[in-house]
Image 1 (cartoon, rainbow, N blue to C red):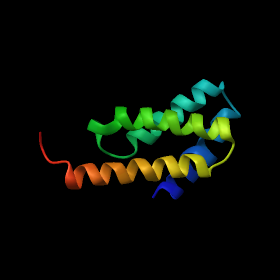
Image 2: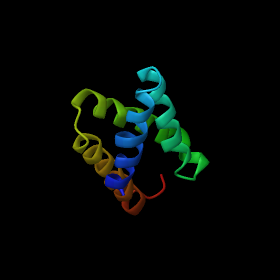
Image 3: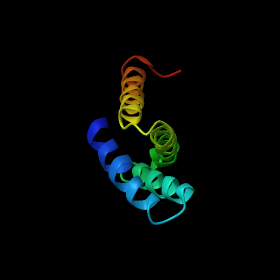
Image 4: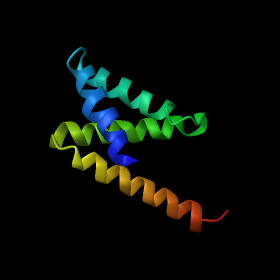
Amino acid sequence: MPIAEELVFRHVLYRFLAGHMPDWSAILVSSVMFGVLHGHMGSALPLTVLGVALCLAYRYTGRLITPIVMHALFNFSTLVQVRFGGDS
């Protein structure tokens, strides 16, 4: 779902908010929404931090493909860790 989520949270929400408030506020608000709306409060903070990184990547490159690829790589690494990581 990286493509859909990046379209919603970066391309639509972040850009809308950035047009109505300071950029750092738009980054923070859209990132908190990204973290919280994933529905698992235990992962809300790490996902908010990921959201900030994705916003910054989008902001500095101006290309939506950058956070899409980053998001997909994050999801893939999480999948590999869950599948093969085991408990230590």
